[in-house]
Length: 251
Image (cartoon, rainbow, N blue to C red; front, side, top):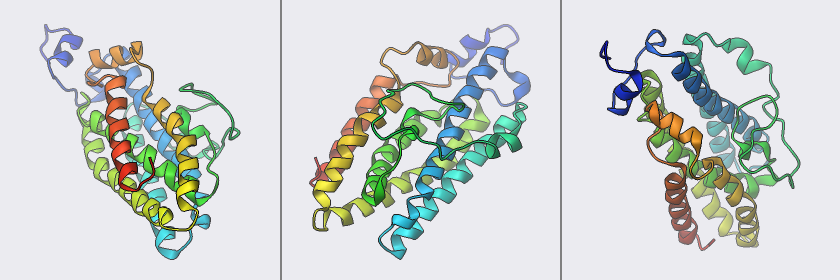
């Protein structure tokens, strides 16, 4: 970074930062908040999906579910290491928290954070059975792929590199979910069960993209941590999900 160019101007021009020593206090705060949201969401998502493994209808489905739980936990660990370079207490952070805690099924919290962590609001809702878990995995997996693709261009280079490594595995989780949803749609009563779960999860996953015209997005954009507005990412997700569900006759 130039000694004379303000950091926001440098970042708006596509500049990157590579070390905790290079960041300003405000940038550090926004970066840590972004990382905490990802880590907390991965840990909460893995904890919730772990309970669904025993609901899986076969060995293949159990293996796929266990793989998702393992890799989401690993992804959280990779980003947590970067948080540690900023002084976060990584040992205490990951262990001493009820990641499996959920609200009631009929709760309606929109995009609001709850409790003592930074997970996305969708991870506060409980899974009810195998079909519900698969549908949630498909819808949220599609959202995560779009959100992560956005973050692969983040201005903190070590984090962007981790997200680039994580992205293909998260996308594969969605593929596993689509495969499972296809098998569900082929079973007797599967279509109606899947559609019921889609109706429940679609609005809740949509809320994970945040508000249109978000002031927080504008702050992150000034620091080069985000580049595409929430509403544009939401529109992309809606189109992707519509195509996926149409292919399975589940729209």
